[in-house]
Image: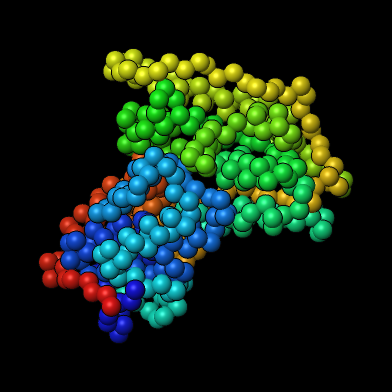
Length: 421
């Protein structure tokens, strides 16, 4: 999709990023006939297409995919779209309203003039009265500095570059037990690889409980609607790791204890690497117990909701651990592994945004996506406003809020139709 008038270099609104967040606000701006353009440095759905492994699927049910004007309309509401289906969903969404998007156009600098924002792209310089940064929250892969201590013959990659078990040798160490780490560990385990897993503090979630998917219970209980300023941890919740579970094969829990029973090697947190060994903290049992405690609290909250609302739901027996570590291995000989997958998250990278709207850690400062610089907004970040903000389920609400802010500040003469070829 291309913009009709390629000679035009000023827009009422420029959106940087053509993922689900950028497309969501584009749809709403177009409904209001607000002149705008999207710059996408790669292609629609790039992160889903190129930065996820082959067996990747959503961990939330398809019915939660409800972009503005384009809710999921497939035949499997309770299923979990695989990555190719996610890409198709986004491409179909963009086509449904002829999104004014320029693909393959990267933005190298965003700065503020006296009368407008200046956006320098790979296709020239543009200006805008308002700018929405919708580039997501996963920019630069984080890999611990001690990775340099590993010998050069060991294959190392970040989870963003993992594709499938066939691309790795037989003996793999995986660092991190967030959503990606646990799902990749399962992928390797099911393929028969010898998996060594360094656990972290990530919480575990049940998949189904008392007759429903847990996501459905959490939705009914209002968890996805809780504003960040009402959350007990306030802004600190933005730094918490998401619960691990999977949508694979129709959805199921991920139980690391069961994996251990089946032969996966579990360790505590990665501490260091010396000449011959990889060293771990003595906290494997603590990590497993804390993950289970989180899952138990989720179930308890559901039980209380069912009782309070006098709902008819089947009773389920409490979870019983199937495996306990009799001792915690504190070291692994380097010669026992051939590859390391770092599933250790991402850092923000807004080096291209030359506007003073960041804290000392490089994180954008905002209130529901609205910064202290008039006309500059962020969208699509985890916990931008609610737990659903960084997901397909909640981006519409955030986009609607920002679209209204944009509309309120634009002079009537700047509300013009957007056209695409």
